[in-house]
Image 1 (cartoon, rainbow, N blue to C red):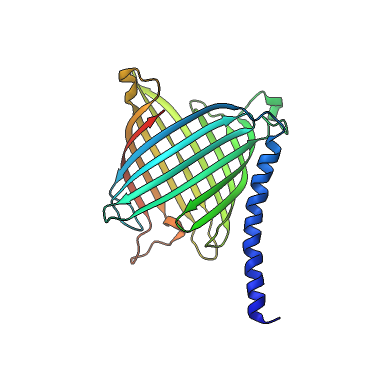
Image 2 (cartoon, rainbow, N blue to C red):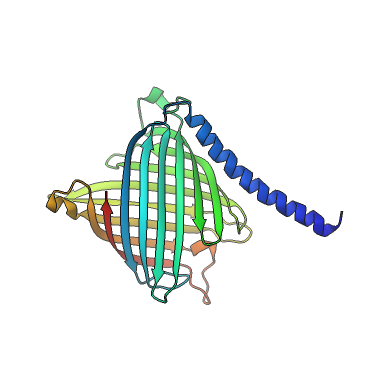
Length: 262
């Protein structure tokens, strides 16, 4: 067989392998979830508006509208978001993620301390699909749901990344939410931290995105939170691109935030 054909076959096998990894991961989550009644326990919808002026890689001035849906089920939980960004130079961009997780305790596969709790509340199988302009990445791995005093939730997720346009690598993701009060006013500090490893064609990168929000909705006794606040993004080697004099990819970015839950 000609060498070019060998390369073509190897390329197809490589692409099939990544697709198979994704299908296997989501099939596993779906099949195992049938061990319990797939009922919804809670859900939350929100819409966020962000405005910032210090973005790197592309136009520095942006508006972002984010739709989010989070839900808890009898088999685990799910988080979905979709960003629509429009830039001051007239361009726009869309990006979204969906992250389902299968609880080993809820599906009665394995419960720590017989389900009585502790610092580690649950073990989960986790997956994420990232959808952007011309690419789809698949992530699969496991997670720890931790019980940290004062926090509404604190999660540690470890993923293997099956990247469409780059070499595969690893990612660790922390997510948290910490409510607090100043006098009679209610606030929330929440966010995520992503660390992705170095691969053949990208550098390790860290993205710490956090929000501090004041629930102004309580002033009008609204049923659902209405937040005003800020989002701060600290990102090194954004998108895995090494920072250089020709292209700055280390980002420090403060955004105005308005968020409504419904």
